Length: 324
Image (cartoon, rainbow, N blue to C red; front, side, top):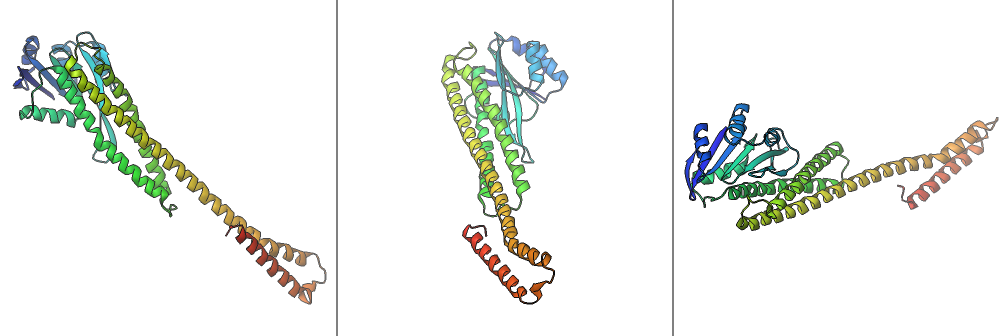
């Protein structure tokens, strides 16, 4: 699906134009154009990216093929920016969606293969004329990325809630039940945190490059806004890193508790074996080394008494060692 918005002197003057009309608007240097490609067909992608804007083939290839990391490329007359949005799907599974931006002097082209709340929110603002209308493509790009980063917060909160639930399960006294499920949750949340960290840090580097003012396509008055966005990503990165460390600590505690429980089991089995030693020794002695079997006469009470006494002494010794 192709959507478009045309601005002139800070006003929305048109939207959702046909391809031929987009070419005419593209040729008019006095207009500001935003074109959004939402899960487009190959024909739509080629018609817009190649036909209307004549982007570099490598940029188009990077746009169509998923990129695992955010990045920014300078093509002289436009910037190609790869960012990632994060969200939870309906099945509560952590998910990332790539958002590609082509930032020119009088246009912004966005490309994504799944609906994005940041894009939808900004479109609704423009359609309802809510809030100020941007007067430059860098303002549209900043607003999109800012909304995208704002949507990181609910995801981080959800992961934090999962982390706290895991910590409660790890620290619970009865941790014998549901161990397999707990391990699966630990690994699942760890993978989510790792994926989020691998996205946030490169995205911070991308915004850092835009905030330095290296590109002429970012106006000087927008640099403080990009620096603020960079700071937000830095704080987000620190938060995710701290949660990741807490998760690793919870995993270490779980392993230590599992090892401790295993040791307790081994201690108990060893204690049972130690208690039976007097019975085995005395019984073997009296049962195998006497032809007349004197224990059936006078020796039997002595054998029973010695067995009981040594067994009691062994139990007392083990209790002092706290093996029971």
